[in-house]
Length: 346
Image 1 (spheres, one colour):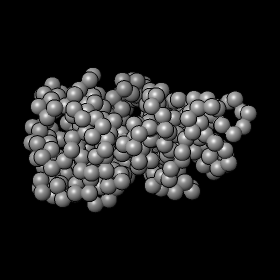
Image 2 (image 1 turned 180 degrees about the vertical axis):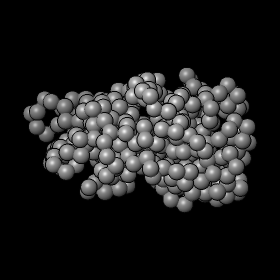
Image 3 (image 1 turned 90 degrees about the vertical axis):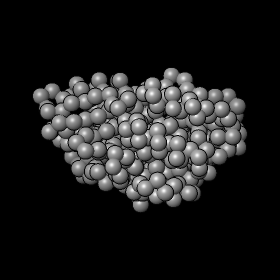
């Protein structure tokens, strides 16, 4: 996080730990306002920039989606997989001027950048950690579109659409209410934050991540690297995978699962009535059989405004349909399955 940006947020009462805004002094009240008009710093996400004449071909050969569809007007969900088809990182890919940007958890920037650089070889591609080059924050709520227009910015109409006004880029992303990411240079973003903060509730990173859970958007964390193939976390259902683009690491396995295999696990949204902290990767078990093997894992989890935790979890489909899913052990807290905002039918 840029020091000037951190100082600006702290003037607005932000509590910041290791470059991440935990809250603005009232964590519980902030969670309770999750479906209202809120604004959130996004420095918990880092940026990898990719630039050079060979960049489109390079990224096309490394990522799960068809990057030819990414432009100044369109962003997309994407994944970087191992040769075994397991996700190393999930992210949003977007384009500004002459650079592509991969937006993923700050905790995965270093290892993802290191691995991508291994395959550049003689290609005219430059990959850099651009996390401190662009300021970014999120805006959502029933009045967010009007607020954007009031600031003189062009508002993207559809999910995955992008628009740019002067030096400010807006990306529309899924959410229970209209939801946007806003990217731009420091000075412009400080002015814009001040305008929007007067009309909204400022919230920490966890509250913004709760909106990802409500939208059914998986975010791979260090604990879940190489745990899932894309279909397990529903990426093919939310436009994160192309089956027509050609080869990339793990493509053969991902395609075989789509056309020849039978998917045994899916990602579901659920609630757990528990006070203990839930972490990505935590194991799930069957409470209705003698099976002692894990039947799935937590993908993402955040405290719920109603108490307990809201989670995204990859679970054996048969256990969701006919069994009982419990956290940590066969006697652990029960997962109450909630509906996702999209169909699980491929």
